Image 1 (cartoon, rainbow, N blue to C red):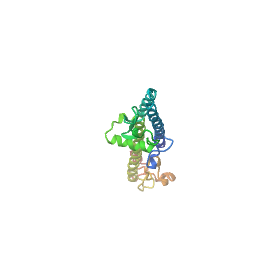
Image 2: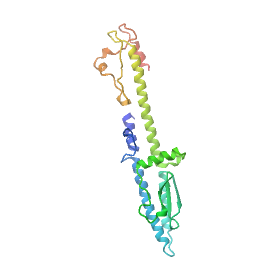
Image 3: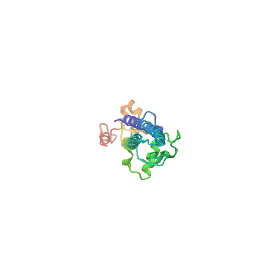
Length: 231
């Protein structure tokens, strides 16, 4: 992939790195947050239903409990989950996600007993989980997306560093060389902060006779050009 392609992949995964933050809308990470919110919303409903069924003499919420367990498994596929039964009725759960309480079973009858998550929340708490010693292999799909985002980011940074090092080395040699007129050369590459901005100095593009291809002022000496090509 080109540098632009790598940055585009980062945007698809979690957001625009060049905007200084992840969590862009329409990303895979945002989709994971939406899925987590749907699961939490259904768990809120199930908690209330379990309380209602438990209040009915002889009624059993077995189907609700099975659905609850399925949803907890689905949330666990997104990231690390722990839960406990601590609500007003047996089977009502509180849920922690990335070590943070996202569903409060003790408030099962309240509409806002669950947090609403977004991509920024997922990134913040994934990084806190890992920094706190949490196992990376337990971070599920969210962890996979952000690990890939970070890996691509390191690759982009390496490309930029490589381009800067190459430009510096070429410029050093070019300044030691001689042009057709017997004068020493200047920079071959213009200053660039990113690999995709690396470009030949405009004056050289306009007048190739300014290329310092010789190692000595003697005409026909192409040794400096060969030295540059050997980098």
